[in-house]
Amino acid sequence: MPCLKRSLQLSRSGDSIVRKLYALIISCHRALGQRQEAWSACQQGLRLFPDDTELLFVQSNLYKEAGDRANAKACLTRLLTTRPSEYFASVDAGL
Image 1 (cartoon, rainbow, N blue to C red):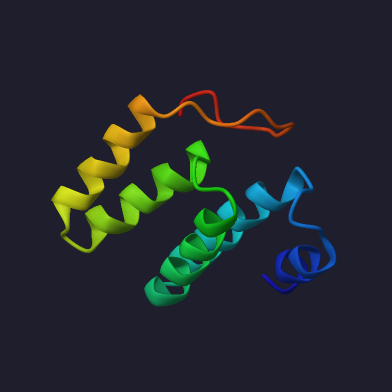
Image 2 (tube, rainbow, N blue to C red):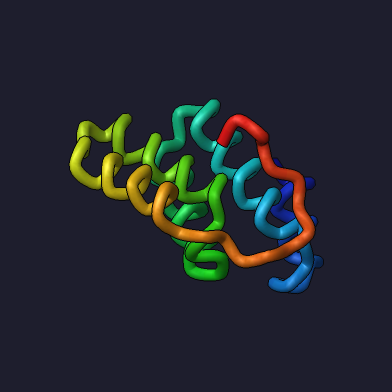
């Protein structure tokens, strides 16, 4: 986690790695059971990249884990109706 956060600090918001860093940081927080920190990192990432496929998918999972099925569904629906902006990045093909 410290390396991911340091990389995020040293990156510019337009760097292609920043989206993935947020996703990895969220994943680490979730694995550590740090739900609030995961939620906070997700919100920060989505403020910078509101149409990011991976971050929207993760947000949906966070809502689902919190029992908020309506917002989880809204995130997934948004994924189906929003075209992400073009950028260089590695994205899970399953998303």
